[in-house]
Image: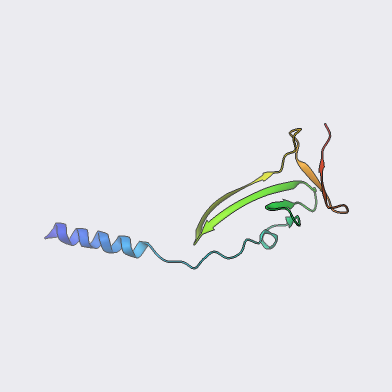
Length: 94
């Protein structure tokens, strides 16, 4: 009898720990950080102070998610800079 009650309690505990959550909202990093989205470039943002370009990848489902943020590197191994006036990515020369 104790075994049956234990199994039922564990089952009910597992059901109570699993919950439903609303769908994730739109990704808007400009509200959470000082990074500014680069228009017409997917997942690219730049820091207005340093002008360094970052690649941000993020996926979420309910309250969980995964992703990363990394500088966006050019072929020479150095990060790109963003020119605000011409709206172009600039390679840093070695």
